[in-house]
Image 1 (tube, rainbow, N blue to C red):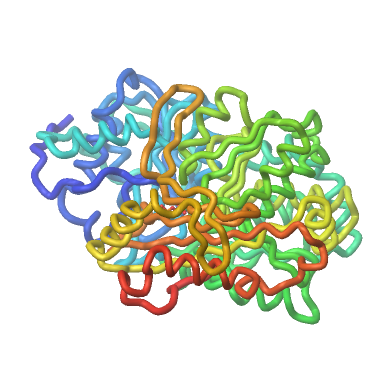
Image 2: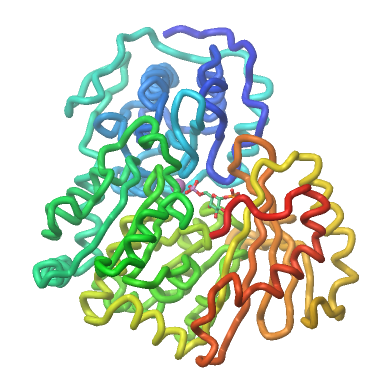
Length: 542
Ligand code: VG1
Ligand code: CO
């Protein structure tokens, strides 16, 4: 084994909501990956002889990083490293592998929905033994250690053939190359009624799944086409590519517009879906109707009992703070707990581990359950399929009935990307300064009932996370929320979340931006977005 003196550059940033994300050339600097990975290992205790799960979304630099991590895991004393064949392993499948094989933890190589390629994004994320993203106390420790790292450990070894299934040895460590789809597909079969879904496909049900040349392609082929009998070609763009075919693997209305257009067209299939780079997000579109992720969380929660894995009902529901309140109304009706957490899946981990919630979701296209400790794109699609198969109704009918029963939460997110960091920080400081003066005031004819800087008190471990986004609440359960993204790699991204609750069925068919126009104007007035950012419109509206 070789101890190498670690020299700069060091990661100069705390791993964010989903690990450390930087441009590929940053990761390619000599020692950079090594310094960060050694900092992860140094932040952990007791992994000698234990198992580490490793894989990524197939993006540019995936294979190089895997070879480095294999040699470092061996030098640091792991007993076994399990790596997905071809370096492929989705984020939810990694979570499953950690739990199923009682691994010490796992490393996921991905920058999720961010683009890939020689000048695009790469990322490294550590997950703990419950299968979930490392909690803040670990990411804090990684960051502290990365600032003062003096040496890293690595063994000399030829590159491991990660394309051939089987076991080889590197130093004293066994390296097992496994099929990344098999265990995950088995987990899905244990949760959903595959017979019912198979029957639905046999009856002519048409679906389009866009893997966006990212990690879910092989999963979608095996599960939808092979196991469920959907016709060949149901899964599109199913070959993972290092640059995702030059597109953003972000399943939203901007980057998956072709799917949206198809679903709104005259010959639309019954169901359209897509997932992101690392397979944890989902986009769901019915024939002629887009389902917002916030509504999807509410709908899946209200209907989950129709799937075998959830037939006993839900323990509770959790959503990130900016996610709409649609799911709250379902929790209330079911008489179960509802938890509001900061943005990022890691905050759901304690609630899931403690058995307080079964289903979780985020407005950013993330839904998942206690089957793993990550959000899960394919899982969400399968739960939808299971519900459709049992109810025998269209997505549109199911959504409209839900609104009629619970009211509709009109919802949209406006992103201002690559804003100069100083200007974005000034906007937030300005907002914080006027929070106390907002309640009781009237903006655009709407009365502000409350305003705060969201703080979360974890009911399981008592930890406190402050400054998680600024909320301004209006009469009638409408609100606007402001926060800065924690996953960008250049400048700052301001996210503005806009929500209006509409109980009246006669007003459930408005165009979303139209329905939200007063609140959108109010958000600009409150945060002085145009003045601070110098932009007169958002870069992305979802
Ligand atoms: C974004 C989303 C957040 C999500 C995170 C990771 O974070 O808003 O809901 O958990 O990405 O998603 P931010 O800080 O940029 O708003 V992914 O698919 O990376 O794992
Ligand atoms: Co993702």
